[in-house]
Length: 403
Image (cartoon, rainbow, N blue to C red):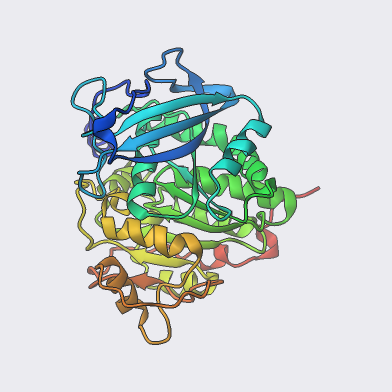
């Protein structure tokens, strides 16, 4: 029985298949003039594969690597989708295609790249989730950047995932393996004078890596670097009590946190089963107590996507596959703007933005949004809630030992 449950849970966490080995650059011809291009910097703790078609595999490398990558996106496609090629090499007229790959060997070279691609000093750091190949995360970030029309320089941090249905524990340990490398990457980025502010966008298991790296930074310095202003956690696969502890141990001041949750997330339901039926942060109902009051007190914005439809049958990738949500990330959350103003109630304002009917709402940067947000009608009350109020409070007894 336990084995059947584990297999079922693993299947729920699975991703879609597609042709492997798409990282070999292809040339753009005259017929592809209408394609768009996304340039990104990719940092990884993966091991080099030795194959230009894949670049890196799912094993762990003690040495981080940095790569410049350009991805071409076809003109005709549905927003929220990645157009994987049906055969290789990709056709840039119809498929996502890599057009340039260049290894970067020094921090100085990386800073030179950033200076050439700077977007008003805004940087986006994307951290993917479970069951991702190197190429999966590259194409997903390219899709998010293109569909959101965000004005930011994209940086991908990709950690060693074996991209296997049965490698959940290996992947989780790989995030722990990579947390210092991500912390160092964020420090280097924040030290760059061309960078004004940094937004972190993490998905699923990648949210654990993001939280652990920020927690480490907070413990070392007493607070997270002030240039890291926004942290967006999409479908966070984190024990909610552990998240509360990580949040507190970052110190003050903290970045502004936004979480995307969905009670119909099948992947998080499987994760909860695998981890002993512990409540996952990404599956809470933020309008229920005790969550609503505690999130409000902590200044954490929770956006409920339970009723939002997307092409993701697992309901785990709504943040990227719903065109309206991607626009919300790119146009408002990335720049720290409020989702509402004094004339628009919280729920109505978010529903308007997600529904694509938003009126002009304030442009003043927000230090916090004081209440969790919901999009549409709320689902029925869940069976149990975990009270994290004491953990979210900065109790002196909860702080780590320093001597």
